[in-house]
Length: 88
Image 1 (tube, rainbow, N blue to C red):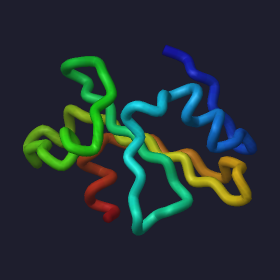
Image 2: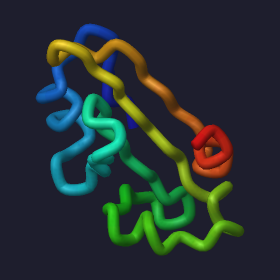
Image 3: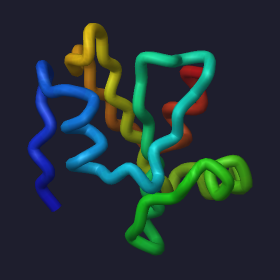
Image 4: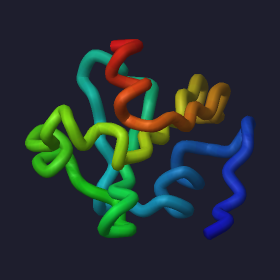
């Protein structure tokens, strides 16, 4: 599925393209919007489901993060969840 997010887009665009139902808003990173996608079930998962993921299944999930400043996306990061958790 092609969604078309690019640097310079607004936070509102991120939420419009990826949905406002499952973003994971981190208090420690107030200028990011994160999503986790379950590859097996082919759907985004919410914060509660994210917190309950077994570490052994991190590789079965994709992590997407849009970092913004002044309401413009500055950086887009896509990784498997296992790699993203290693950076944390």
